[in-house]
Image 1 (cartoon, chains in turn orange, brown):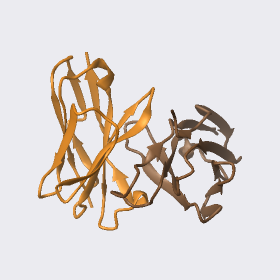
Image 2: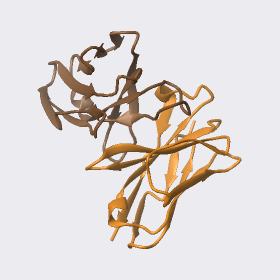
Image 3: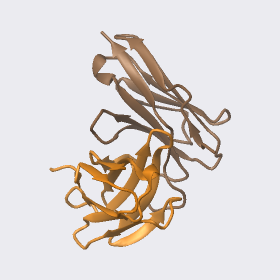
Image 4: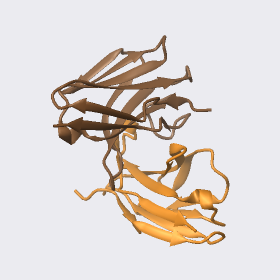
Length: 114
Length: 116
């Protein structure tokens, strides 16, 4: 069974630009969560989607948004990029039981904002 | 304000000895706790969890202890192996289920180095 895949793996953008990251969950998984990892703040929850609906949201500004498609693939968008958005963005998928201990993480997308 | 704290950024242990990683939390509503392991260039991998109704959970070489009154949990790895060298994250939630009230709150991680 293929794991969670994230594209691209690395990305360099400049301030003010916008970026879209993609996540393909494990086949059959309907829940996709996004996390941001930075050296200063550690791992922080962004949002979670289940069956194309945002089910939970962390404490991030509206510049961070996401969506989920009918095939459970998810995208995350960050508009008007700031230097502080440089981070590793992790996606995690979960099956029908939807518990944290059954959440599988992808390798992440490393975003650098110059 | 950090709700989950891992006060030791790094820990070095000799192969075969015990590794003890600590985690403190401040939110008394937290009811479910997890430990993750993360290798470079990979996403975190779930290791072990514990519910607040228990004070100990064991899985092979890994044991998690929970002291609710002290708001403290620890992960014991016995015996430690070089392959255990990774960053370990402690995380807490009010509920074990995704999509329910509260989110998963992570500590900043402890880098464990197990020397042969």
